[in-house]
Length: 238
Image (cartoon, rainbow, N blue to C red; front, side):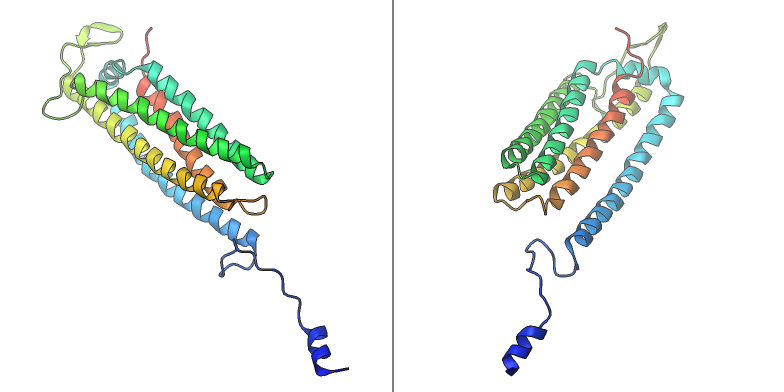
């Protein structure tokens, strides 16, 4: 037996290189677990961030409940409901996109990603229209803020305190503005995912970026699920 034959027979088996596997991971599952852990840690910091805002809102709401209720009634609960429905539908399209990647259904994956992005823009469009109305009514906190002679719901003889109402609108713009910023970032992420999906980067064996992006998108949706009743439905009388 020649030396060359010995080398061939005793050489260890080398698996084919996975182009999606980064060099510092031993296997795809390890890479996926690390990515998931990193995203969950990031989302934990986001929970603490928004949690502080929610706590501030709840404290002021307990102090100035009637004034907050009066300010809340100037918001359009119909637009808020529409945006809630839009985000719920967008969460569904995210799930369908991941399902399409898992089962090699390219059309479903691409179509769902496109719908997710479009629904994101619809949400921002509705929110922009709502913001424009607030500027027209001078409900934006600052020197031009106006909220005079507005009655407190359930107390027809009591007028809302404009300074307390201004606190409500300050929290409204901060919380919904930061949420909208997260939506813009999410749309950017999904445009990148759509580009990668179009190039055929995602397969049933590798679609981790879609799952990570989905986690982020679902978190943003959940934040809105809390914002909607707190800001729009405090004291709804219709």
